[in-house]
Image 1 (cartoon, rainbow, N blue to C red):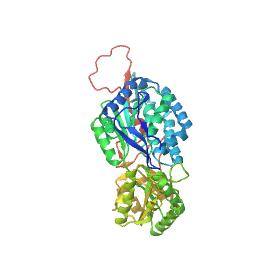
Image 2 (cartoon, one colour):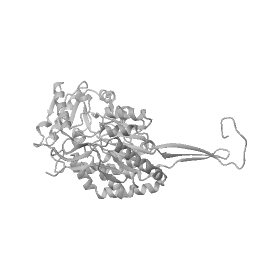
Image 3 (cartoon, rainbow, N blue to C red):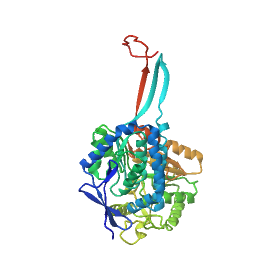
Image 4 (cartoon, helix red, strand yellow):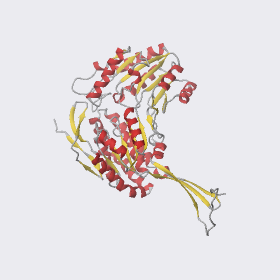
Length: 496
């Protein structure tokens, strides 16, 4: 067994290895410790913020098209190293290699969007708002911004934030999850290779101590966070009270509503991929299948059982469909939900504990719970594992009420052949992202990602146009160039 590697930080354009406290990093497919990650204290966070603060004036003054050139080069480098980066993700997170590659590609789409900085940052001009008076509006960067990302997407979620922040002229302190920290450092190295000046992007590894320091640091202007709802609430409240701009994305319980006219084979294929891909550790995973009509529900459960039997479970670097969960503690938590669901009256149609591979890895096979009701914990709470709950309802209106009354409103989907029914659902449903015959409706980079209700705290969604607005401030200038003094004007200016 190889000696665990030390995983440090990236500050001021280079890797640094200090900090006395560390945490174990595992290969979740084998249950072994592969690294020890440094956990930054407040002093280390301050160093990173100071590096970003010192680099900001020059970076903000860099023309947008010059900033974009760095991102263009970064994009090419990530594409060059795609397979290597995917392997880093699989080694620490556990997801299968194809899924890891797909995550990096979805992050690259945001980089490509951010490369359009010269167009994204164009302002507005109006001539002659008054006699000899012109007006111009334009967007300016905030300064130092913090990005705090979760374990489940160590490439994609950071790449949803820092490319847009950098394109807009900000400098960044990124705090990745301490469970799979290496990928963030690899991206920082590639940005240096692409020509990003020292200190413009810094990576600080750590736990709650590092996060809490970022939330209140006087030189941090904005915080972007993705994680669980309790932590998102804490981040939003603490950083907002400290006077910062905040977007904090929280938990989810995404429903797929299957109307009786939908092809059950199509619905089952979609639900299998959306519920069990990445072992269910996605904020956009489908964790509830709402079947309208008893016969429809029976058909769907039958189709799901057949497909689940064919899924392969094992280490993500092999020929498998599902990898492990992120940690032993999380595995125990998800397994506990199965016992809770049965105790509350749900029918455990497929028990993934029976199909988990032998060994020390953190594996759980696909699980299917039928006849789940809204009162059960397995319906109310985010499980974040390969568990799909089937809820049976009589009408489309009842299905819509389920989605609307749940505390989370991240994403949802409806499967139907009826255009009118789909249009009514899209218009009425209380969720931030909606799919019509699309189970995971994650927007492309030139739109914006975000939920409603307790899935998002703050006013701005992530990346796309909303990302540009979040990482900039609007300024308006009204200008007159008189040839001579016209005397004092004491009334409110009307420019008429």
